[in-house]
Amino acid sequence: MSNHLAVATVSAALRSLVDDGAGSVLSGVATNVETGRPDRMVPPDNEAAVSIFLYQVSPNAHWRNDDLPTRRGNGVLGQKPQAALDLYYLLTFFGVDNRQHSEVLLGSVVSALHTEPVLTRERIENVIAAEPHLAESDLAAQPELVRFAPADLTLEELSKLWSVFFQTPYRLSVAYKGSVVLISPEDLAPRPTLPVATRNLYVETLEPPRIESLSADAVSAAPVVFGGPLVIRGRNLRGDDTRVTIGEAEALPAFVSAREVRVDVSEGPFPAGSLRAGPIGVRVVHYRLMGTPEVPHVGPTSNLCAVVVHPRIPGVPLPATPAVANYALAVEPVVGPRQAAALLLTRPGASHSIEAAPRATDRASLEFDLGDVAPGIYLIRVRIDGAESLLEFTDTDADTLPDSYTGPTLEITP
Image 1 (spheres, rainbow, N blue to C red):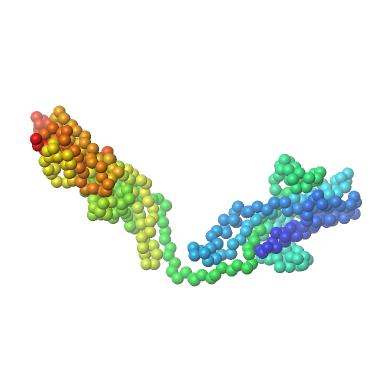
Image 2: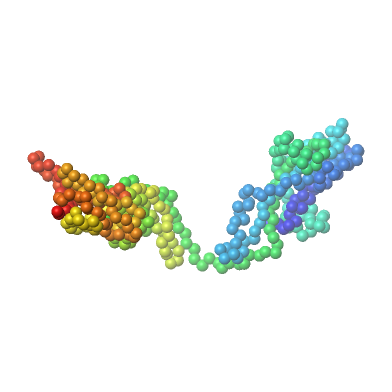
């Protein structure tokens, strides 16, 4: 990195380089090379000249990212800040027009910059030694040497440059870009940090776990019911510490292999009150044991797959009478206040869908108004966010007996 004299040193070193290329190319004609605005340079009729004008400075796109971050989380300086700059120079050539002095100087300077595009440390040191005002410059110690390359300016851009900066008739010119100049303050010094006491190296796999299917068993696509199993099948499911997330809840599975993971959808593996019925997202998360001492860190995560968790009616529903306007029915898992809940009653020739009473908090039971339901025995289901509790099904082997649903049932008495 360089101090605040870096830009001035680059200009002086470029003048030295151009002077070497153009100083003696015109025999019998003195050639003056100066840094400054070309509109202020008017050489005598029998002399030639080259003007070097720094017309633009811009951040270097590559090196500017190397500057972050310069401070630690507590605000203490971690490394010296540095400004990475690209310098744009306009080289203008003067001379006797009918002897093509400008064209000859242009060819000589372009050849010199193409032959020696980099400001060598030796040239920079010689320029600093010859210029007293640059004595404190440390550009020669910069790790990245400044390199010059032609800047591709269109005729329109070049004409705008002359009309905006100089407002004088155009002279033969060429533009060059010098990159990169690294400037850092001299009065800032980062505090030394303690050496690394323990080094930990970890190798991560590039392929994360992937879920391919979800069901309640490993053979068929059975529905997932609260309190029952969830079987996750896929690839790369086994990790150092494998966990399953359902919604916002996370649990350790009961069985883990590379192709299958099993976990109970119940309050045991998962925290109490964390599960909900309805459509919900499932992920497999691999935790990595890292650090000294080792603690779990979140690692690769699988794709998100949706599963419908069906609610459950625990026990046998107690009989009810139509006069009961707030029949309470226990439901698992707990139902949130924003979840849509309904009771479905079915018997031959009649069916009812009854919305649950509003709730302000999570509830383990729902209240329903049965005032319009006729007495009888009904198959009972509860629907939470579109997921219905399952009915008991009797599968008979006899051809004369039909398959049928047998429960659970709710008796409504007169």
